[in-house]
Amino acid sequence: MDDLAEAAEVTRGVEGGPCHVLVVEDSAAQRLLATQRLKAIGYRVTAVEDGEQALSRIAAGDIDIVLSDWMMPRLDGIGLCRKVRSFSDSAYLYFVLMTARTERESLAEGLRAGADDFIAKPFDTAELAARLGAGRRLADLHHRLDEARQKAEAAHRSVDRLYTQIQQDLSVASSLQRAALPPSSDEVNGCKVAGFCQFSGHVGGDHIGWVPIGEHAVGIYSIDVAGHGIASCLLALRLAALMAVEEDEESLIATLGEGGALIPRPPARVLAALNAMRFGAEEHDLYFTMAYAVLWPESGRVELATAGHWPPVVLGTDGAPRVVEAEGGPPVLLLAETAFPSAELTLAPGERLVLYSDGLPEAEIASSGAELGSEGFLRLLRSAATSATADLPGLLWQRALGQCVDPRDEGHAIRPGYAPLKIDDDASIVIIERAP
Image (cartoon, rainbow, N blue to C red; front, side, top):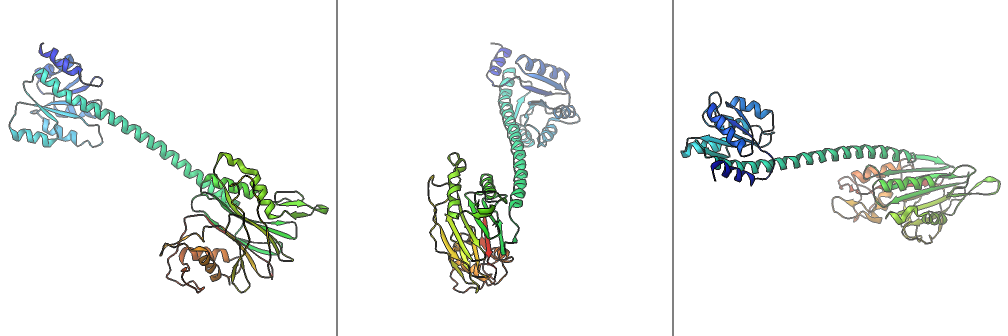
């Protein structure tokens, strides 16, 4: 087998398509010889006569391997190699130096400059093919890595665009959900009402509200849909829409009596009706807890029902909180058929009924890691109970963020120095006061 046939055999064992070799040689005869032999064994070849021309050609791209003479005018092979290695944002080029120098110091200098391999002049075609074969394999690997990198960068850009779009959509959804909340305080049928609803993310599953039912009753509710994402937000908004009333029209929470007057539906029946709707529950795992109460301000009578929610609290006129001991039902949508117990109580003039989600009582005290709990929440309520109803929810939230009651403290005052609550859940509260 002659030299060219042997070299071609070596070249055929290398994977990949035609490899592009840049020959850098100031000798026209040597340049022509190298070009002919490389083309004969299957390489694409471009030839230039010095390092400066090589840099321009490399900058144009599409070069896989550089085969450069060591000694050249203007810019020699060592200088060319150093400049090539300085192109940090370019694809890796396999660099082979052609030289008659074989002393160790010279080879070490070439390696320090970034050369990958050496071939002695005059070169043997089979040896050249074998050495370039290694470069071709490396070039092929770098091509694949570069393609993978480009695909990864394209995927990253796509994900980044998607993330940006999601953030924009979430921001709009957050604005819409907050716009659907009631004002921080109001007066309805002679009762003072107030509340807050804070989400742990852009949107949340908590919702509060109050609604006049006719001229003689007020309904208030606290909803906590499982989860904090868009699905929870959508269900919470759907529930809020169902808890609305229109004059002279029956609704989920009111019926029409004699003369077209609106009469509140019993809260237990309202919860049962919501549970019967299912909201496509067979296709998702969402459920919600809820407390719903109806107050007749004139008499102070309150009818209420809870579904997996924290028990309501009554704030006495002396600021002392007391838990409403009433049986509750399971969360809504958790069981297909269930009954929800009903309870009644009477608010004295000036007393306030408090409904709330689990965001505050289940919050963690940052300094100790303990849960605030029911007792801590009641002490938090009492610490702010002397404030007006319109100010009470906001004051509770501020104190929860900046100060909190130590669960071991049997006193009621909130003192500076305690760590804030670590609130990882949506938190909401709604308060109604019977007129003095």
